Length: 427
Image (cartoon, rainbow, N blue to C red; front, side):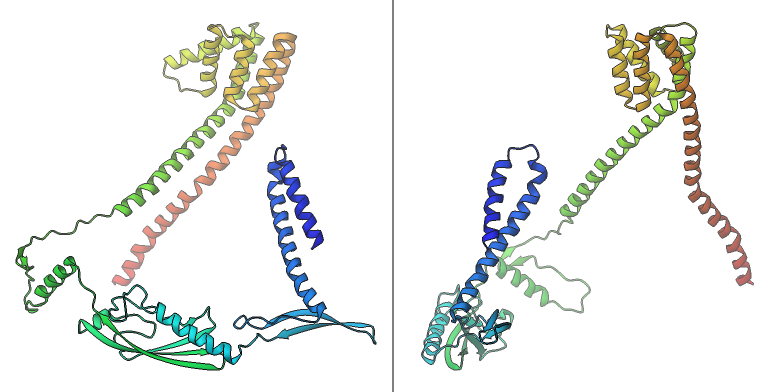
């Protein structure tokens, strides 16, 4: 107990001091859990020590009546043998004395009289289910009920209003109280009064009576046009399914949100794939133009011009050249080359383009000869990677075509087999 108590205090103080530390978020949950278990260990040890002290004193308190038998573990030490044995002690619960039982029976009867009516005003006017309990005095006294009119009221106190043939019905109740070895009987009467129907219930009841009075052999049931001297008109119930529609709307909204998210992710992946596929050609063109003696800025502008001419003739758009066109426009608007190159690599957001930009930046400082060597090496490497990527995409396409081919095979087999079976069984 002492160890658990010390740990609880230390952990509590440590958690207060560590709340402002950076790593608190990582250790918060383990600290809370360990503190909770330490506290439970402290409580368990405290309750166990209470029993241990009682056993050591030689006097163990019995459980109160109704709490059940007390079972506890103890150790007995024999002084002559100088030996200790474990013993499981089972102590029956305390029983009431005769005077206590009689007192509890009387109190239970008074409690029953006070609680039986429940929400009803008195025994002369029971218009709702009375309170029929199985025990009183916090479970120390049990009760068994019986009623004279079992077709109107059940042993649990539920009134069957549809069985009421009179406005007032007298019922006798018999209740037997038991406490330990003592018993007591009580008998009393009460009146069940039919519930007074509301104006709406009376009107609906009269309409149903008029419909029930019609001849059941007729094909058409004539709905009454008046009730209690009042003219009435009828209207069919509207087939509204608001909850179902709202539920479908919620599902559709979630599906649309999820589909839009998936579509956006697919477009992002498609863009990255196109950028990777265009990278070898982009590097090869840049290396070729630089080898022709052009500067880096001039080579990039020339590649942009070639792409724009292709667009004017109906060429397809390519993501890398769209980003290149944006980069050239930024440089024309006064942005520095290094800054434009960095923005270009961030928009492409792929490792090969980051490497290319780093090569271009280094080439501006170290000279075009080393840049050409690096670009040629990069072009050879990415060309091999593109061949591998093309091979991989071809394998994926072949896998995707497997299901349609199997479906076509099943259709062809059905076209061949079904007429054969029809011709066999037809003859």
